Structure formats: C-alpha cells, structure tokens
Length: 413
Image (cartoon, rainbow, N blue to C red; front, side):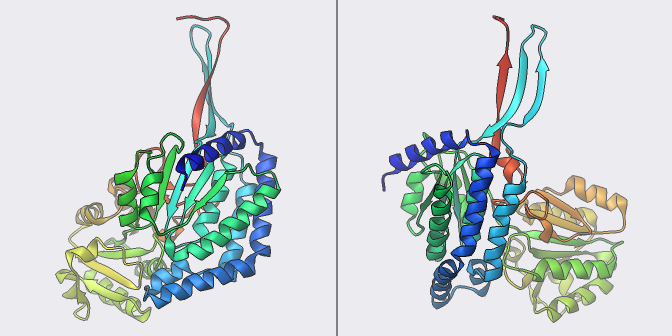
C-alpha cells in the first residue's frame, strides 16, 4: 500500500473540507444518511457474512452482539448522521477575544484538527459515526476497522463515500483501510507528516498497541471497568434498578457495569437482595471472601476479575468497609471510564464526585448514559479515558482545535 499517497490525499482533502460551510457539510451528511437506508439490504447481507464467520470461529456471544447489525441498528446509524447534521457547526466559533495594552486584538477561534485516523474493532457502526463526525468538524478521516467486520465495514465505507462524493465530498476525505494486517497499522502510525491525530477504539490490547507504536498524538478510548457502589444510605430499590440496567441492558458495551461494591454496614440486607436480582437476570456472580460470607453461592473472585472488562453477563462483587475503601478500590481497578454511587447522602455524593478518578462520575443514575447521544452531543467516536485535550464522549467539540487571529495596525515588538 502506498501510504505516502494515502497521507497526501487525506491532507489535500482536509484543506478543502476546512473551507466547506455548514450547509454544504449538512447536505453531504443527509445524503449519506439516505444512502445507508437505500443500501440497507446489501449492508445487512455483508454483516450477515461477518456474523456467520465470527460464530464459526467460536467468537463469544457478547462480541458477536457488538458485531451484529439489525435493521433497527442500521436505522439508528442513519438517524445518527441526521442528528449530527442538525448540530451547530463546531468550526469557526469564536471562543474568546481580547485587546492587549499595545492595541493588538486577539481572537481565539475553532478550526479542524486536520487528518484523523480512527482504528476500531468489532462494531461496524463506529465507521459511520466517525466519518460523519469528522466531516461535520471539517476533518479528513482514515478509518481502519477490525478484520471481524471487514465485509460490513467495506459496505458501509463504500456507501458513505459514494453518496458523499455525489454531493461534493472532496476525494480522499473518507478513506478506509481493511483490517487484518497489523503491519499496515504500524506503518500508518508513523505518518505524522500527514496525520494529526489517532483515535483507537477497542480493547486494551488495541489501545496499548497504538500508543506504543504511534509517532502521532493519540487519544485513548480504552475499555470500561465500571463500578456501582451501594453506599450506606442508598435506596435499595433504586440500586437494584440501576444495577440491572447497567449490567444487563447491553452487557457487551464499554459503559456496562462490571463491578458491584456494597458498604459493609448494609451488606447483610443488600447482598442477598441484589445477588438474587442478578441471578434472576442470568448474571454470574464472582465475589470476594467478604461478599461470599453473605452470598455463599457466588464463585470466588480473583484479583484479575476485579480488573476485568467482562463484556458479558458476569460481574465481580465486593463488600467494602466504607466509602473511603470503595473509592480506593475504584481508583485501583477502574479504567477511568464511568463510575456510579447510589446514595441519599449529599456528603457521600460530594466526596465520591471529588475523589473518584473517571471521565464520567454518576450519582443515582445508570452508567449506560455515558454516550454522546445521551449527553446531547450527537454521535461520538468513543469515550476518552485519558486526560489531555478531551475526556469522556468524543463528539464534535472534541474534534476541533484553535487558531489565534491577531489584528494590529503596525505594532512591532
């Protein structure tokens, strides 16, 4: 593969994209959304082949669920593009302006990042979301999907590119690399001459591979080891509702719960109650010694279980001494994604918010809301668990940077 040509084409497209106004970008997005609907049969057929191949390899049910497209999920993809078109243009926004004592006027305005490479696994809808967000924010994008979704990704990329080009999308604005060869990814990760930002979205192995091999800045979208803490004052009915929603609604996604913590003072009542609810929902429980003293039927949890992103109907459980011990546990084992406390204590809620180290911290609400659409940001590329530039859902506002416009009347230094 000619990576120099790939990079040059993307850079040229990025310069043209940066000049498109909102109306032009929105027209392209709406055309893409319509194309996803009109090409639904061929996209779903391609996905059926990917799913069949994954099942034949013995892929877990949770990962197959991440891979699978349905008519409803494909319709949601199209709706996502329409929602992005309806959002304000993030480019050209004046964040602030000021005048210096020497008369210089300085204005800080938003501009596209440039060329973004997005490497993702399993979920083929990510390609459509990423392409749309990059287009709306004026960025060219290079997409590299996983080999497990190669047919789906190719069908979606072809659909989007064809519809976009017919409505003014610059050539090379959306480019797609097939999955399967990590040597190609390594080579792309050294194209810092052309690519401005890399965003990996997938498991820890993918994120670590990209971070270790990239000469381009990386925004990490690592997995979600998300905790629910039942604090001493918690409403148990609320805890049960949020626990079952967070663990069971869609266990294969990164904002699903993986660990349940209960304060010791309420464990004698809360552990049997919540353990019964989990088992009724088909969840396998792995508990530490303190948990199993109240729930002998639980499997013994290993230290690795508390660091695991199961992405399945499995949960690790622990009884902790107090709020401080719970926060320490979360900060030790959590991935910095989303954490929730169930409490009726404003003091406990405040301390949890201040001391828990995560991109999203919840009080009395499900971690399943960690999502660009649920936050009112439209679709998102992923959930950033790092600290630089962006943290939490990566939506439009996180895909622009700034330019300082300085106006004078002859000043010299």
